Amino acid sequence: MDGMVDENGTVDPLAPSPPPVAISSVGVVTQQQLVASTNIVHLTLPASNNHAQTQVQSVIQPNQQSVIQTAANIQPVLGKGNVILVSKPNSVIQTPQGSLHALQVINVVETTASDDSYSDDESPKKRRDLLTRRPSYRKILNDLGGGEIAVIPAGAIQISSGEGGQSIHTLSMTNSGTAGAAIVQYAQGQEFFVPVMAQSGNITSGGGEDQARKREMRLLKNREAARECRRKKKEYIKCLENRVAVLENQNKALIDELKSLKELYCKQKTE
DNA sequence: GCCTTTTATCGTCACCTAGA
DNA sequence: TCTAGGTGACGATAAAAGGC
Image (cartoon, rainbow, N blue to C red; front, side):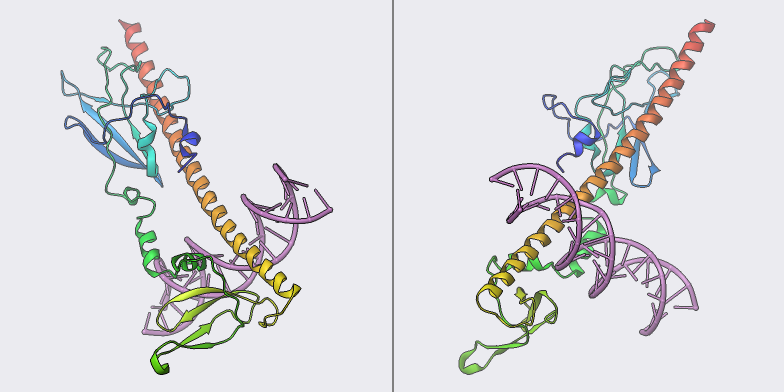
């Protein structure tokens, strides 16, 4: 997912890698759905002195100047829309008790209860699609090893491949009446990709054949390009959604921090 | 179970743009 | 100017979802 990190904020490449994802046993973890596609993991650490709990809050904003400094390399745990609100050592947030609390990032949990816990390729829908969808023409072509494009007239063909003509394999072509490629369905369950002559289905000689071949090549490339384009588009949209989630959480955390600072200020003022 | 609607994916065309 | 690649728009198709 190249570029995703940049969209959400750059990550210092020199910073040490974060520890493996896990949650400390002292923390109480609650999970709330703030945004449709985003899970917020809210860590609430029990205060050591009393029963009051210190809310652990922070903002993930690696590349911004703020009173809230981010721990290095928080970003990598933000995948799949999960946004983790964690504490950081240098936060200016004080506890209601007035003592500066060294809130530490313990670890980060990755949720398991939502769809987001699936990897991109493993969501239920994706997996279902993998089971039910016919592979794309290109995939079929690639799976069959490839780039060879045979030009044959449209229509059904019979191939005798067995001994004494025992197994005659029928090839039936779909889309054969239209310009462009056709799927040839092989009787034994295989399919392969065969471009069909654009005009009448007849192989023309000379310049016509060349033109047809050029056209097929262009269509093939454009098909690939369209696929790639859609993939990038999806990635971009996902990236934007992640960014929205991150910014919303930053906003929320900043509001909370402001509230805390106000409380602290009022408290110190009254003393 | 059948029909209709919605959603996702794909291929193609047309257009635009950058580079040769 | 030509060409290749990227992308929006459109229609076709299949599957899921929902209503009956």
